[in-house]
Length: 256
Image (cartoon, rainbow, N blue to C red; front, side, top):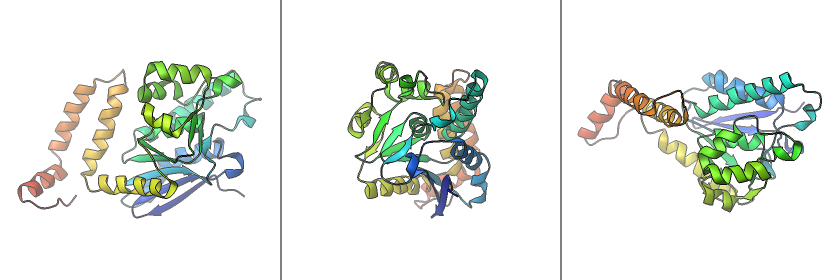
């Protein structure tokens, strides 16, 4: 039986691969449940986790949307619950305590693109294609796509892509700010790893609080400046801050 998610832990990095290549890695219930389980509880099994890289199996797709074969039988209530579970899972990824990078190899569509957008960074291969095509099915994005696409590329262009369902290539995605880099597959993976290796040398609490501060900017229920001040206080009073400052004064590398 096919394992929907493959997790390989190497050098303190969890490599998560959506493993449904015959379905272009479409996100079905087992994939979503696997992501939910890893980011809420499963990650605790990996000692000294410093980062996560999410990609798709094969070269054709990161994740080509949700698995629509499950849609015909869904009711209004089913749709609401499906959306809320996906939003909860993706929000957890967005707020995760270490960097999460999407390595987008091929199609990143619908719910798959929403997954990529929930990650902290996105690195694409030249064959990557991005779209929120839900309107073609008489639907809208349900896992946060209408919100995160605006955050990442701005209202005007996001509105165009959401209303038309148009697909953009990797170079356009880079121009719009949807992805951080466009690199050949091997170089893309190396870039993901190098970024995590770099952040792994920083203070763990500082990394976690920085992620939360950035999210606070987009949370209407939060005062981002107040949260930053509170987080600054927490980091200032932490043992790792004492070590970091002392290391700087002693002209040595900190031991976090």
